[in-house]
Length: 640
Ligand code: GLC
Image (cartoon, rainbow, N blue to C red; front, top):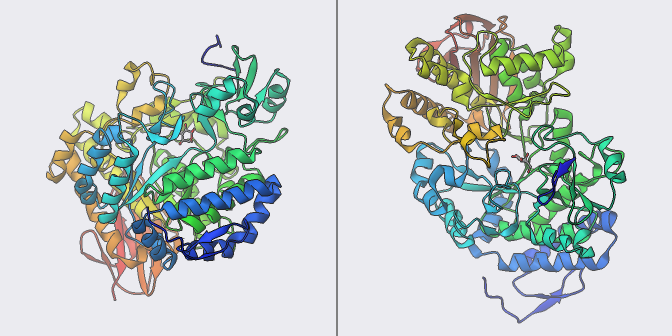
């Protein structure tokens, strides 16, 4: 059981012609034609889904009415982008997409600072920035901004809604897309609704899950797993001042919203549209599997979650079709892909390639590509329209969600293997050069996740500390090889800011009482602009990584075979440490070879369809018996 805070534990519109709007029976102002046409297209399905959950005509009519208002308020520039993207639905599946995520204060102080750094972002070849949570949140009870106390207010230290609009407009001028989090599973305990619930206003209590005794919470706890078993155990928080329990899946100050209440759904959709209208291109739906709760279930991935996501997709296609939905589903593959929906009834546009990410680090620790190859074969077998967001690490921990059924066949049990991985990445086991920290080590299950920057996990931190030049060279090679391999995957690659110059773990969070308990802060350090200045100096680690990545990024943008819906497959190399991936698009073929071991290897491939050129060195190469140096890689392109 967790303890509560107070307990021990414009556009002008002509008013001339008025037509009928379907669904609401209300009059419609001229200028609405596009909205009307889109609403007509989706109305029946939206109404059907809404009624299925809420059976409430008045609330549905209100929703349609407010959608129209948000459409009318949406500015002309954004409406033009809407139209462009509506007629080019695959716009985000191209090979020019490259993302970068950062906390605004860590990256550039505030929103104005970010605006002044857009040139740097362009130098990184990045055209998609994920601004980590920036909405109002109580200091010290923020979960990195994921406890929102006001969905319409920017944290004062970061800027204002006006500055957000100015930033998104400046980004659009440079063809940079902006992503933000929409934290819809919960609000902060400081949100107005929570405050009114604390005053025992029934209407607001019904927006959360309140229980006046411990019986129901105990029943839920029987089937609901824990997200933060160490830092915030349990799924409920007792509020002594109120004499009630409230559901808190994450931290005690993050109160789960009750989506059985149509008022919650409607109001959250208005918040979503309000934010979309500030010029946001990509909405990351935070913790989406958790948004519907049922007793006697795990309260994860319930069918109603998909109804809600599908409604969100329809609502955005009616009001702001330029906006992409990125679902945060950090779960095993069979649970992730349903969030794409179906071809006829799509849900999210993009999802995180989380199992591939975790399996990548497993491969680093074992030097054995077998499981990774299998995982990539699964991904390659999925419909090509599925767009994954690929990454080596993000702001969260790495959870060891691997295919343990397969690993068991090799004699690797789940518990012992997780232990090995955690030991390895802390630098205790195997031939490891990694540095980092455990996250939410659960003394009961023995489970733990892991935190560290890419550079630290590749050995750059250790080599730097030990002033070991050879080890540093190897670590930089591993870092670059991992990026090259990640760029070879289909979808959109996203870098964590600072990784482009090999930034190390930052242990200073331990001195901040608000952060000390949460080891994820070890890899959320501030951008070091002094180091970034070395990005052009090839004799430095920063320069080597920055220049190395820049070369890969340019190749990725240039070569058509990197488009998201190319044919992709893996090729057997007959060496357990060398991964071979192939891509084919409109007659162009690429082969990527990646050596996950610190020894030189030979990839025993034999492609007989012509000569190839290594796009990195420009050398002509035969894709047969390829010698590949320790932690090396090749991008081989078939000659025309
Ligand atoms: C998501 C975020 C994570 C946060 C959690 C609760 O998983 O990525 O940082 O703690 O949601 O909002």
